[in-house]
Image 1 (cartoon, each protein chain N blue to C red):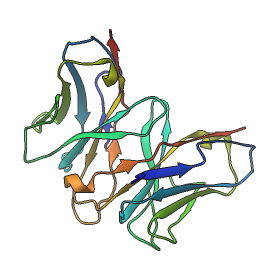
Image 2: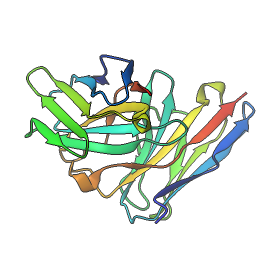
Image 3: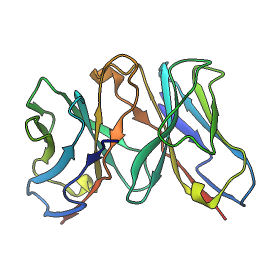
Image 4: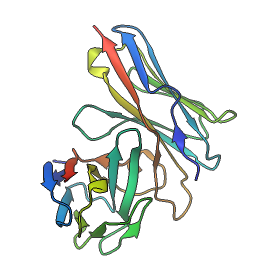
Length: 116
Length: 114
């Protein structure tokens, strides 16, 4: 059981370039999330998905797009990268969101993105 | 909007001592709280959670206390070990229908002195 995996682990982009971050989970979780983590800011939710084929905006969605074509995968896209998107990106997944222990969010190891 | 915050950004403790990490939350509707541990270069890892109908919950070497009157959450780590060195985040959530978002605090860095 690998849990939540993310690829790539590191990436450097130039302003205006595009890229896609891949998140995969093997726990059969319904819910998946993308966060960004910046120094002194904590974790902020970018987008989330409550099931295959669904996506929704979180707290800081601008400049990002997501897709959930398969239940186990959640992709985060940057169409035109900006220096403000330099951050560490974390994917997470959970069974549900009712607040029970089994609905706890499990996190991947993160992707460190630098936009020059 | 309302957000979760932390009283102390850094905390240094001697190995073997007990650690207490504090968190203040402002959303009175939140009914579920989680503590996460994040080691350097890794993603946050679940430690312990508590629902608003409880005041205290104990795990292995960790205890979470919830004071709803003053909207305060704390994580107590007994006999702190070097492996406990990490950043600790509290998170809050309202478990009502249609609510999906966890709100995280900024984190407290715990350093254990051998």
